[in-house]
Length: 135
Ligand code: HEM
Image (cartoon, rainbow, N blue to C red; front, top):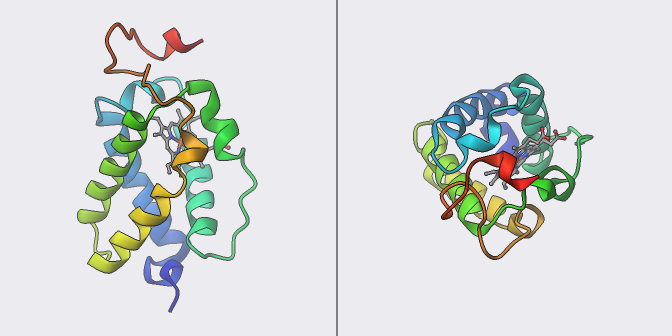
């Protein structure tokens, strides 16, 4: 059975993404980026992306990761926060230990598509006043 099927297919992935989204919003590094984002649309795109990425039959039709994240000029700090929140989400789920590790490793390979700066200028960096500072 494929990883996608073991995760419960489309419905299983949508449930993970909903849980992820609650944790992302509450996270002190990531949360501020999502203040003005249409959450329902974002979660549809995240689910579609993850389903395709994890071997499902869907094809992803949203922006590329580089297009979606480039404007935020994210650093490794933000990417690591994403992996941490994803790990917490998976740890709270019924996904097996091996599959959790597989998913986190695969996501880590997307780092270069998401991160556009080596030095973080995002929330948490000294002097950062919120996402508005990035524009
Ligand atoms: C492997 C890591 C990540 C994946 C797979 C991912 C995936 C996605 C996807 C699929 C979208 C939707 C694109 C679209 O609407 O067409 C998105 C949007 C977004 N992501 Fe990520 N993301 C990741 C990491 C991050 C990180 C680290 C941050 C910030 C701390 C972040 C912040 C955002 C924001 C703010 C949006 C909304 C953009 C908008 O609506 O204009 N993402 N992400």
